[in-house]
Length: 496
Ligand SMILES: [Mn+2]
Image 1: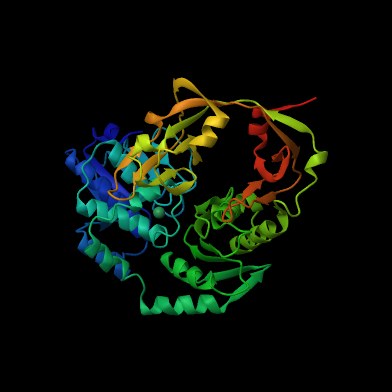
Image 2: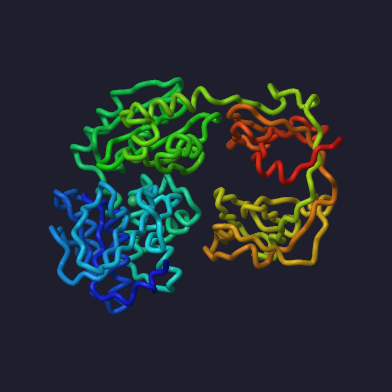
């Protein structure tokens, strides 16, 4: 569904969830501006028991000149109802009676709780609904003025604990669009009331240790308090990871910090929220959300916080840890396989920006900083992942095919010039190449969840589940890694 498909409606209601937060308000406000520019009469509103009272939200409405109404019923003649940052039919959004024939559209970034259709745009991998709306408005070529940009930036800011829990490359793109530093500075620094400071204090006093994971529960509060709390807890000695949660009307909101190599915050967040919501972020900081409804479904009615604790325990118990060159398995005894040559993409870094430019490569898997150089090429993998390689190594290992490289990844990798902010896509200047040599490996299916730590990446690790393969390059067993089961079956052949 595209926004332009909706401009045929005149009387449009944009509804935030009950007790709206900055992300819902920002998303709705930006859509209101779009539909107003298209000649419609969009009303931004919310229902539910309480009016907006939070000081930072009242300040947001004033500074960005946002008008939002608290209503009991939809105005007569409503032709289109759009729910933002929530899904009509879910528990956290007032189910207004709809006039006959009115259309309903859902724009949200939470886990789908309703059947998806051509009238729903639900993207749980995005950290904020503001990111989604921002992306939709960009696809329409809608000129966003400062107040719209400020609002969307602030929506993302508050949903990611001050930008520390960004998940998707699109989140990172929006995070760079701070429009008006002065307005945002005021908003950012009016986040906590004196009462909320007390909540942070109390939360930190009630700690429960699950293995080396510190578990903290805040009383129901604004989600941005969780990030401040976990930032403090992370620094405590002997706590490898901390999980701070609080109950929100329709689910648990989580903030996670890691200070140990064995736990990547993004990965534990994804593990804890699996099937119950969505979680993600970076190596050290991540966030997540688990819906009560989903927890009840998958656990057979467990108390949500108890369920979360059981997930933390499962995470701590589940893994085999393999340190390359140290306690690795007996690769020599494993079957030998050869890797089938598969075309991959590459670009000369100096073709993207002139040699010597400081760049950030942005991909689905995260950001990588490097400098363009005649001697540095960029490899592009099947899922759009990008990694630098020395030209010399490249020429030794790959044969160039005279074809452009085609890859339909969800987020085409881009290169950002760190000096002037210019962004260029890498795929248009990429070509296809094939590995020259047949690579031999030793491999075996793993029986249980495993993490592999290598010497050449001291920050991240490979993670696999039962059914994936642990693989080592023949002759260099300390060069080991995990390959997903389905990918392994497609790309490796047993050597008899
Ligand atoms: Mn949100």
